Image 1 (tube, rainbow, N blue to C red):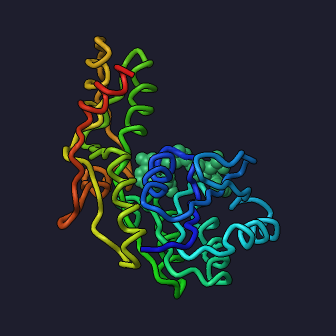
Image 2: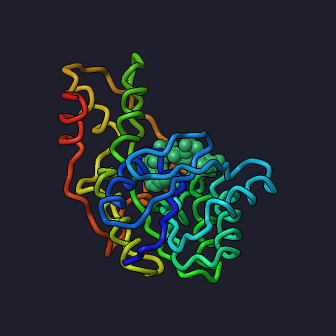
Length: 260
Ligand SMILES: NC(=O)c1ccc[n+]([C@@H]2O[C@H](COP(=O)([O-])OP(=O)(O)OC[C@H]3O[C@@H](n4cnc5c(N)ncnc54)[C@H](OP(=O)(O)O)[C@@H]3O)[C@@H](O)[C@H]2O)c1
């Protein structure tokens, strides 16, 4: 197990906020990269850096962030630019002699013809081709994202129910626990995907959300056209054979979140 500092990019995000305390509890010093200045807290050091900022500035920020680091958990991400951000991080990690780069990707990264998935796949390739010892975990959509989507859909007078589009949402705490285990275990390359325990049609997710809120709405069946629709209907975003599955269900997540 590493005693050197672990750098977590995205340590302030939905996933990162679960990862950081687990990592702290496991022992190594933890440093978090963020685009904002943040005060150090709970034995976690925050360093400033924008992976999509001016490349020369970002490279300087990363060189400082990576000093004395031997393991990086790269969780920073957004709707766009994960490929660009990851290439920059990989170059800096090589300069710093990082000994383990752990990357979180998404199930179907190489199969869904959507910009977000393509960027995740290009980022995976940047990590795998870096020459650095690495681990890549692909996860399904987190419950938190399913909740955000369901909440938005449920505001519409008719809730869209795209036929054949299914999700297998996973609890972010289970993804975090797996990532910390992987980070501490050492480089493993691509590891089995991690999805939730149950596959749902999108309409089932919104119905579950509405029921948990004690509401109902009419659903409007629709068909997602083109290659994207075909890929979803073929289940390209779902866990393939050999995947691992979390235990916490969407229903448990809803009950906990709405009680909170
Ligand atoms: N959400 C899902 O369902 C899901 C499923 C599978 C995989 N993933 C992957 O898991 C990772 C984390 O997702 P999440 O839902 O936790 O994201 P999130 O809540 O949106 O948080 C994004 C994180 O990335 C950091 N970040 C964003 N842009 C950055 C930049 N240009 N430079 C430096 N840091 C930046 C943010 O830090 P600051 O705001 O502090 O700068 C924040 O900590 C992403 O790589 C995502 O693709 C997500």
